[in-house]
Length: 304
Image (cartoon, rainbow, N blue to C red; front, top):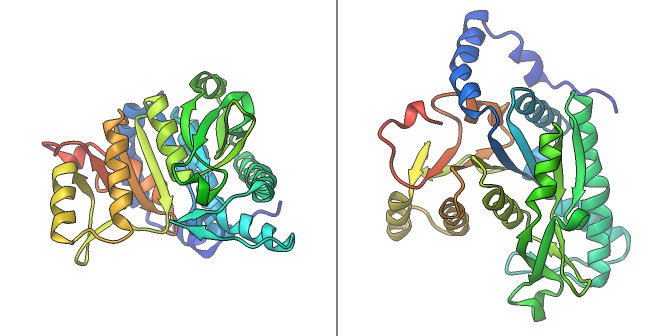
């Protein structure tokens, strides 16, 4: 694959040496704190489509693994599925934010999501020096599922029932980055389309991950013109009641706190369109997105 270098990458090299040094020093305590810990990253949005952003993301993920953080990557790929379906003469329909999935569409999802999309991510991480391995939710019974409550309407859309953490741990202990395509199975031989956000949450809970990081097209939680760098459960409830958090952001926030309640240390929501947002969120005091915590901390700025 041809190496892609965008203007943002080139301009980053021109930053003053003192500023670069300060960033590295600021990152050191976080590197020590998170060494050996597990981060689950849900990868989606524009960061999966733009060549420059894809390269930066692969670099960031590789660096995180190289400094000793165990990375488990769960990816989406809805646009690619829709395009493949169109080429095959299939129409994509969505209800309640979910893709209506019959047997033909499940085959498209397997072929696209667990095939080309998954392997392209693996290859790109490998290109930047990481050791990634593609995993379908069907491999080694990684994602066991059951039908969605509205299966009569949605078809073969599933919800996670159980995660094979032994297999994921085995890959992580071998120094690999599991790149997981969110499809699942049941004991009857059915294959299910699993929402990538839900799959990432279930995997993070099952692994007792230190962090679950959503890389999307959303900068974080906005209050007026300001992005909240940290939000706790009580604050979120107040903002929802006041209508400050509204619309499609409400289920994202509720899902984040449900994941926290499941035992994950922190949830982060960051904009994948911003340069090196993944590293800046984890390794700087202020971060660049919003982190979700169970209770307000006495000193947020020193504990990203």
